[in-house]
Length: 403
Ligand code: HEM
Image (cartoon, rainbow, N blue to C red; front, side, top):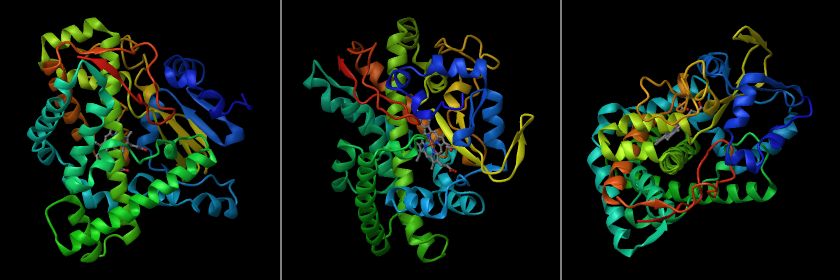
């Protein structure tokens, strides 16, 4: 096993369908050690859950890196920016940064967005329905919808949105556990620098003309309360923007693919749209748009009876945990009536997804609108869709359909 690397595991064939590989890992070794990489790959529900809740497992560098290797790694503006986000911080910085935005995502505020999400979904369908008979549903619907929702929340002006709505500037490869190519890194750096300039100027604008959006709130936290630095401000806005759409875009695509690959479940749902909230839980479990998360042992500690040395890097395969037969009956079957499913899709512990309720609401309402308004929707590529070549984030690049 020593020569096994993550690059050798995540081939394009595995990316197209990682579940048999997850199953093999879970059955043969749910805590696979790759000593050459100082890495532990966890694939059982129990170990994944225990890791995410474990206080000594947080975010930190591989101790085998020299200072100059680390400096070189962080000389990338994209990586440096990601490091400033709550996603990769430990307490107390994590607590401080998350505390600044957590209220905006509470249940009441998210519920208040339901009508607007329904309206956005209908507006998008209005925009393309007469132009049929077909097109790319990612471009027409599943990409723009979450982008518009998060732009509304952050307060990105309508006039500036087209650049975000038509294409994503976020490189999902940045959060993959395998090394990026120089081209990928350069592209990610350019994108981050460009969005930093944009978000900085938007923050200046909000400083001059405050409103009630999330960016104004964050700007005030920086200026008046000294609760975050200028760099933290733009990096965390960029995180909210990225986490707030890419994941949900992919969830919509993965959900549709799962449904059209399982026509009995599609029919069941069409016959009773009240099943949608439960169905969305099942879509999240069955093929999550976030497949894994990463941790590092901040101290030497024990995990599920194993000794874990300080500095060990850990990958928790959330999507493998979601198919653990110890927890789910018949885990490889899509069952939109499955009851009481626990999920690892939104992570757990202190980094539990801030947008979980928002993502659920968006998926429920968006999929209802689609099924109601496009009763003859057909996916043209069900067996071999065009998967994004990313490992952590899972989703299709495009979804050719007719309606
Ligand atoms: C289907 C949609 C989504 C999925 C599957 C998802 C999944 C996740 C996961 C697994 C984590 C934890 C990562 C870790 O522990 O390392 C996370 C964190 C986070 N998510 Fe989501 N997410 C989704 C949608 C959203 C949305 C709509 C937002 C809204 C802005 C959002 C914002 C965040 C933020 C800010 C964090 C970092 C929280 C922290 O570090 O404390 N996510 N998400």
